Image (cartoon, rainbow, N blue to C red):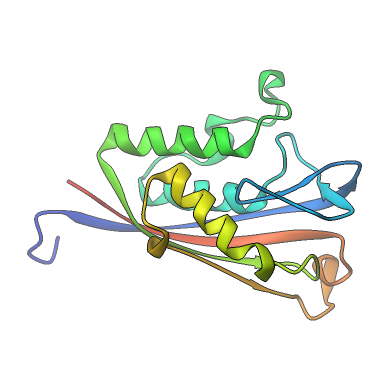
Length: 165
């Protein structure tokens, strides 16, 4: 049932988490964030892009990010998550999927995200070729609870709304 519309809408949920690692740069939404540690991962560890990619893939009824970018593929070691998101965008375009909006929440004790929020939104808007008003980035702490609360890593939830013919 499509509610009388000539197009369908779907929602996708994405989640990612990475521990901090010394000696790496920190990237969130494709933006380098000044911080003493980066995130461990097969790619550059950009948890925000990974969660958004999975939300978009899920909303489009496509397999998850690990299917397209397996962490045991040596050719993808150290890949920029921006490349991943661009490929996801291409996959959506191939299926005729349009992004309506993306909402996300970054969970971290530090660094503070607010000073970088606008730059992250602008960057993601450019990569996905959607209006900045279609993106929302929020941040919260874990109130010192669990591995995030101890400052051991960052987690992100993202939800995407898409339409397709």
